[in-house]
Image (cartoon, rainbow, N blue to C red):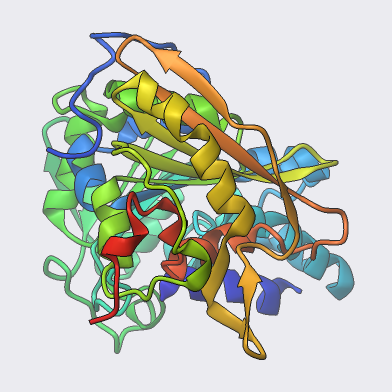
Length: 387
């Protein structure tokens, strides 16, 4: 529930091997055109097969909304309360990469969320898991010396792995909830590494070393996989994104009722990866959905089916009286685009928010994933029935 709490805290306090098919960029290489695609270079490909990957671009959000001067929490707290609330709503577009609960422990760790420029994060779909499997990699203007000093004062010990240095406290996945730090971050910060303005945090040593191996080029990253780069490319310059395999979609949909509006849906062909993105050019806002198919003909064949599903879909988690609500409150479904690559193709559709949408619209992307409301991506919805 930390991601959901993060979104809530932004509003209240200052008021993202089956799957990618193993096609690497060495075989059908495409250029890295987006920051999301570049940041996938931190993520071990094996992590993506078991967990969804979130991305957030705080720097782009600040540039889009004219907030570049807000580079630390003190600058935000100096704003009038009403302006602070506006900033929070704007930057909610980078949830969940914007780990807002860190503000409670900034004096203890030496950094705060407003110092983060870009982030890539992964966590389990089992949100009641305590402690949670997760990691985060942040890029920003971090003071390595100050962070080391603060962590050491909290009882961290310095350790090394290959040529890297990191700080450790507690056992793997352990938490000292009685400590001032542990009360707010649980096991999130058991392992911390700071290098070249990049901050890596994880609850266990094997997660930390897996990321460090990938950073050193010893492991396959998600950026090395053609389908992952193709999806990042199709999503474009997003403020926030999430990527996952269809196995995660199936996990989400198991035990769900088939809603009446889905009974006549045509099946989708088997895709190997899905990405969601939130884009805001300062004038118009979109949720972008992109599927990667190993067979380009399947992408072409499913274009009309995906659009039809998105036009008719209603959530079964949020009710208003006895009626289903739209996926997001009010949007237009755009034309589908199929982009071919050497070994597959992406099918991409954008949902454009209409002007009367609420200013915190970006959170809708997060809630679609958090509430596991993804039946519109089930290859054959009739397979999913309540137990």
